[in-house]
Image 1 (cartoon, rainbow, N blue to C red):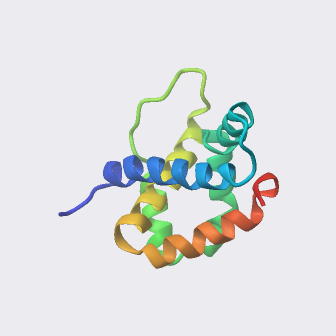
Image 2 (tube, rainbow, N blue to C red):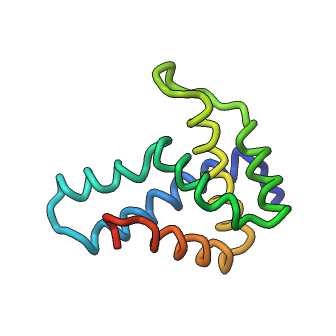
Length: 121
């Protein structure tokens, strides 16, 4: 099957949430704390920040996918900053792209991200 950017963003959102939840359950058994930690990283602001941090690690092809993902037309809540949301969407696109096409690269990037998430180390 040929995947498009919306497919990558859709699956990338789920993969990112599962990755964060896996880290969180290793930190606490308290439901409220798990939720608080998860929502700190599964939000547009955090994802945009992480995208900024990993952008220098991208190959030329990945940078092109990220750029196209950033320009993806999506519906956002009016309260959200469109630039931040676009960057977060591009992050989800990349996560989904790696998940569906290159699991080794996904593991590599997630390990780098994990090592930079102070609270979840």
